[in-house]
Amino acid sequence: MTSQLFAVCFGATEPLVLARFWSGVLGWEMVDDPDDGVTLLPSDDTGFRIRFLPSQEPKVVQNRMHFDLTSTSLEDQQETVDRALGLGGRHIDIGQLPEEGHVVLADPEGNEFCVVGPGNSFLADCGFIGALACDGSQEVGYFWSEALGWPLVWDRDQETAIRSPHGGPKITWGGPPVAPKTGKDRLRFDLAPPAEGDRRAEVDRLLSLGAKRIDTGQGEGSWVELVDPDGNEFAVLTPR
Image (cartoon, rainbow, N blue to C red):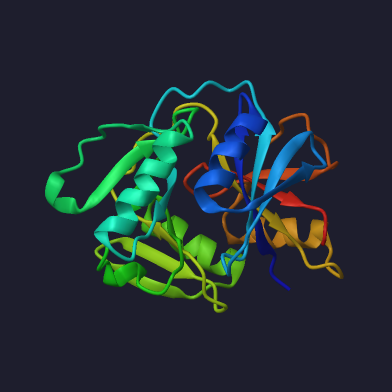
């Protein structure tokens, strides 16, 4: 059986500060994380947690992954922006155009996210977190479709998107050109085999799909760290 997307994990200088920000933006409950961090539990059908774990890796470039938050109206969009700013977020310029209809913000540690305007048909029924928008190749979209067992819902002009059969956010990849990787990713996917699953067998399956194993000195404790075909780190947790 394939693993589930258990969580999106942020490496954070101050996990509690970042967790409080995102808890306030999303309205999700905070709980302790077993790896000395903080976890947010979804209050909707998002289907995955958000984890904030201690990290000393500095943020030096734009993240390869960010959240696209949806809006039901212009007033709703402004309310989300105002709430984020009030919690410690800030406006940033990454070259977006006014006619694109979204507001680009950063959280207190500089992680980018977008508040998308109303009427976006691509994210129409995806919930408040409409998408995890990623910088990545067509190949990596195919990899994650197989890795998670999520069907492709978009595959055009080397842009891809997948979505869980149970609904929730889409994961999208914008195709070439893919920015070069600089340092360790601040965000990663945490996968978990089902409770009756075998982590070693799941790691072998992911390797056969094109992942590569990396040695971070972690051993095989809380997680096994791999990279996808674009070099993005992700973790395979113990079965749950």
